[in-house]
Image 1 (cartoon, rainbow, N blue to C red):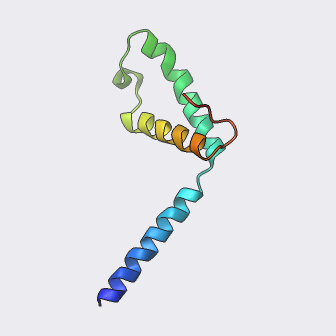
Image 2 (image 1 turned 90 degrees about the vertical axis):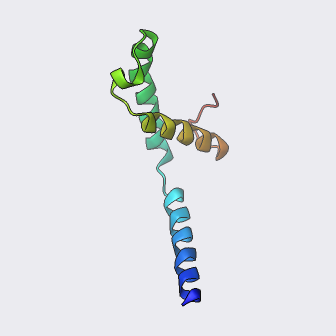
Image 3 (image 1 turned 180 degrees about the horizontal axis):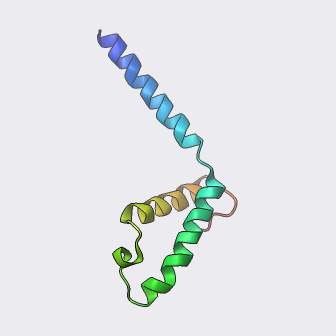
Length: 80
């Protein structure tokens, strides 16, 4: 019983890493660029993120995508 639980846990770990490797980096970077372009003028005008209509989760995901893309040396990723 214990061995099967460990096996399932290992399979889930391997599957989660496989999903992470399947990220379309160029599409994610483009989505984050569009998010920044849309938000920048509103934030500079003094509007908050909630007024812009974007969630903090979307912003955090873009930050994570950018860091990982730079770390993996994906073409088009800029270090900030």
